[in-house]
Length: 270
Image (cartoon, rainbow, N blue to C red; front, side, top):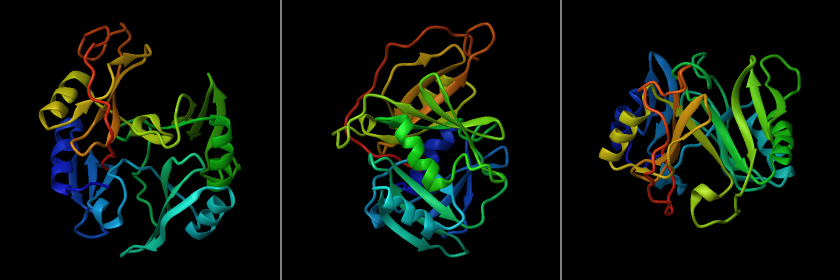
C-alpha cells in the first residue's frame, strides 16, 4: 500500500527496473512487471484504509472466510475484511499473534505470480520471536505441509524454518531480537521482502537519489550481498545481489560498506 501511486512507480522503476501496467482492481492499483512477469502490486489506498504504508505478502487460500476464522481461533487479528474486489476475488488484511501483518487472498491468481528465482521477489522473510511457534500458526492457518497438490514443504535449517514450493525456497521464518510494539518498525515482528537486482551499488544510488534511505550496511553470506532500505514513504525492503563464484559481487567489488542510513519510524510501500 502506497500513498502516491505515481511516486512509488517512479521509485521502484528506477531502483529495481520494474515497468507498470493497470491492475484489474481499478485506477488506484497497478501491477509491477519485469521481463513480462508480474512481480508485485501497488495500491494507493494507505490513507483510505488507514493502514501503514508497507510491503505486505498475500497468501492464496481456498476460502478467505475459513482462513480468517482460523486466524481468530489462534489469537491472530483480522484487521480489514474479508472484502470483495471488482473483477472477482476476496481478501483480508490480518496479523499473526505477534503482530506481523500479512494478507490472505481467495480468487484467480496469474500463473506468472511467484517468489524465488528469476525476476520475482527473491524471498519473503518473517522476523518473529519464535520461528517454530510461528510455523505452527501459519501451517494451521494456510495449510502448509499438508501434502495436498501445490502445497508447500516446511523444514528446519540452521535455526530457520524454511518454506519451499517445488523444492525452491520461497520464505524463511527467523527467530530473533524483535519487540512487539517497538517504536521503530524494523525491530517489530514483521514480514520482510527481498528484491533481487543485478548490481547492488547502482540500485542503492538510484534509491538515495529518489529519496530513499539505507537502514543497514551491505552484508554478505558468501552467496548474496544485501542491504536494507526504506523508500521515500518509509517502506522497508531489502535489495539482494548474487555473489559470483570468485566471491565478489557482480560488479566485481568485495567487502561491506560502512554507510548506514536512518532508523526512525516508518511504514512501507507495495
